[in-house]
Image (cartoon, rainbow, N blue to C red; front, side):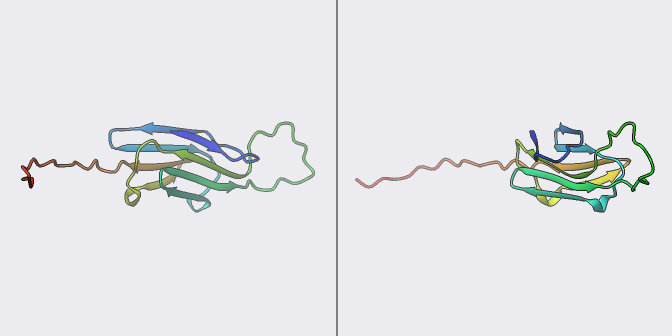
Length: 120
């Protein structure tokens, strides 16, 4: 699974885990609410995006260090296996957006042997 970030936007740290039943993607980004995220799945691409805005600081203050990134972000994950889009879940809690993507059940193919008569 590969992650891609759009140029000019910040990229929050993320984890991608493959389990027996599916993928788990976690994105760490504090100071947001669940409604501030957009999570979408198209074919084998998961996209997590949103915008983080921190409260305004009065202009009479001087900053000595600024490391908390704000603004828009968008992270894309290319999935190496097909997932069941109907069963994907997302939850934001304690600064972590976690998306669970169950694999599609493998479909078995049954081969039946049959004698076929040919015409001469």
